[in-house]
Length: 144
Image (cartoon, rainbow, N blue to C red; front, top):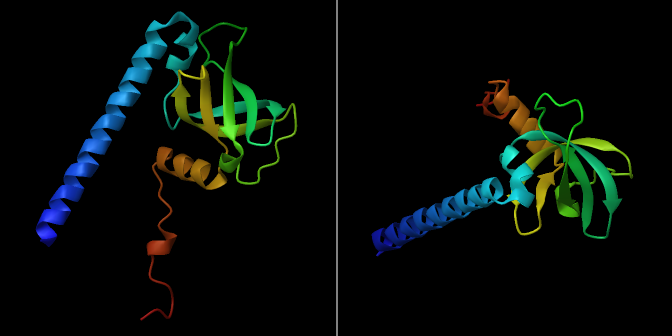
């Protein structure tokens, strides 16, 4: 019985991952081929960006990120938003700039969704630098 349960669970997870990949591929295709959304195709999930705050509501911080440099001296602005849950208490006064992580290029809203979570930023920076914080995995002095 347990084998059947784990097999079904594994199959469900595989199916969920495949559907998510299909959704993300379709989003990328839409962003590349729909003129109004083309700027979103220049960003990938997990990419570090500078988020410029230009609005704040009870649920979301709105702003923009600059398109990755393409040799133009004039940077294009791409609309972006961060849910307050994804700011983790980071103060976001109007006009401020924060480092953020792209979590989704959302073609429905025509915006990038970003997160300002300090732990997520730290994790991505460490992995990009080839380092991992293994301090939790180290045997501590006096540990049996």
